[in-house]
Image 1 (cartoon, rainbow, N blue to C red):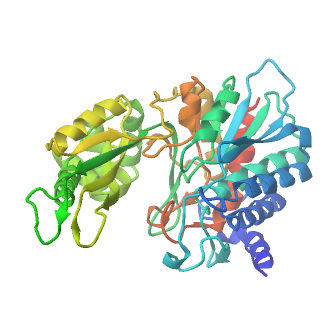
Image 2 (image 1 turned 90 degrees about the vertical axis):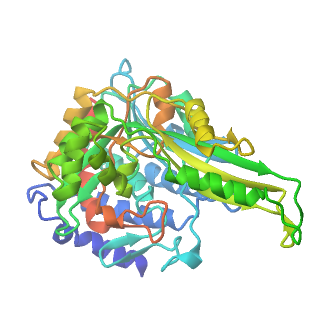
Image 3 (image 1 turned 60 degrees about the horizontal axis):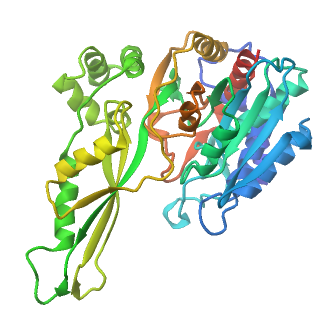
Length: 466
């Protein structure tokens, strides 16, 4: 029954498309339907790190679809890496002298507890114009859009000059070891097109496309463990130096601390472009910050917006705490994890030292426990890529503003940038900021984003592979 509903939803896509969409775009109903069908099947496979991880099943699902779509079995590889794997599918170009184009994604998702969700996160549902389920935005639908688009290009007889390698990692949300292995294997690539996330922004009131923000840089991911130890004792004889209390005080200091706001060429271009599209205080703050990153009023406005605070500097936030060993004993040990997203230009060691100063307590030790992260410079503002992404967006939404940005999170792009491979994020999905539930509860994406997403990829992939 669910499959029937899904196909009906895809059939209705032209009605659901945002009003700015071009009416003269040639429809690709077979690719649209395949993208949704595959996404539903992939969401149903719980590809979460730990016991019963089904990332391998997702790889087999994708591989089967690619072979049915014309890829040779010998050109598809599924390679184990630690407790997970990565997958590649190679479409050989006509000119072997050209460096390959890598279309990048990941098959794993963040954990989701069914008891917390309105619907089971691993039972895909198409309802009220949305695809619900873990991975609907981050990023199984993006994966299947890429697969369906490549199959559609083969169906239409396209022959790339540059080899195209579809590459999916298996632990981007955790250790990122498979992403690093992929980048090592594909270090001779000419460019990476990462389709992770949702880079199109819909207006909150009208639902119309507002702008598209592709990314050429990202912040460095880091985890720091705060630890307080103590002799402890009987809870009936409290000590003045309680480990949990000391840790709590340190966490509050970090919560109240703001790293120095700053900008670079990419974030300045983002704020200059986005300021023209955002009305009211937020747009004014963007414009003021672009002109002067020390503007206190602009900083206060942007810092108060969760979608903006990560764009103006380094952020650090407590994500996990653990303390004590018995209900009736004083704690002998208390720990917390501080997750930081570091603005380009700063090392993890620099931020560790700054956190230690903020804590201002020699009893609280700060230790870097980051796994799977490397600091990298921004990718160049490549004219060929900028022209290709702009053409692809304008082919669906004529005249829509297209601006560069920096990702506040981390992606497998960093491993490729570490090999000096120009790497860009450009996911064709459009959603409202208020409906962006990546890593959160009740993740969902408008089904209406599928058809224009396919059209976007059918434009940009040939542009970048010729």
